[in-house]
Length: 357
Image 1: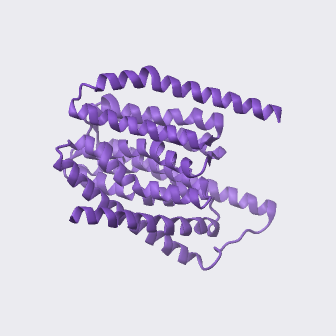
Image 2: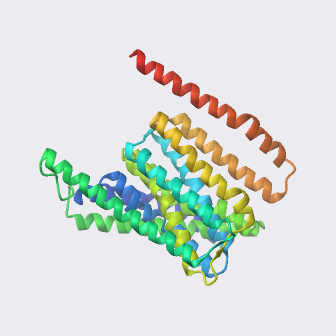
Image 3: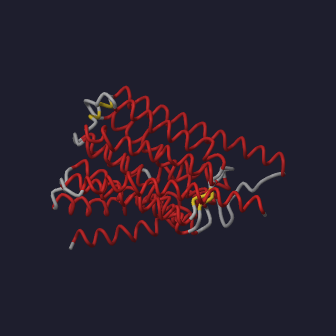
């Protein structure tokens, strides 16, 4: 009963926290001359990644490397497939040019770098320091880039507002802080309840990290992205998902590898399958974003379906089910080719319609 009450309280905290966070962050962007996209990539992404950071550090210090890596890898897959899928179902998400040109390639590069660093079976302290350094450099670059763009807009169109509508910018900072606190607290309650039930069912740490903990620690991103989509802050919704992935890879794994006394061992199962799935999903986003420059509702549904298929695969593999081979054959031989053909057909049709208008 206690775990059920924690689960319900966590959902309420996430809902309220996401609403307060998006309100404060969108106004804060105006106050400091930052675009909603950059706020999503930095402030909101860092805040919603706080549960992953907390879980990664705690698990690394406790010697639970499988839970640490599974949490990060599973959260990244969840961010792209489940979160963007749900956001697109709420409202079609248009993709800003900066996301296509810069942010997705950065995410792909970070994913590939982690795969390379993990190839020897260990993310050591030196590698962790490298990841954290790259994250700091990326954040400094983003803020400077946004400030330059803001000054350029001022020179072109005159002075822009420097305080948020409805109050001093400090009030918006308080809203962001309060929203983040509620998100972290709600996610913590949900994860505690979910891990309790998963371990009661006898599921191992890697699968718990890839599924239960990954979804649980991604709930702030889900709540924030959905609320941002509802409020019309589509850039923030996209920036939150992509930025959180970069934070997870460079920040969570970097800090875990840096803090763990003997480095962060990489489970063989993650190296053989899950890390490559994470990289493949990141790479697959680029052509989808580049060709269509929008995630339509039907594509959001496809994203969610693929995430569900990934979770089903993990469950079948963990339980040693005989249905795993049939399921894998169906996905590789029918579902994935059909999805690709459908995407190409819809894209060609839309381009032809655009030419005839």
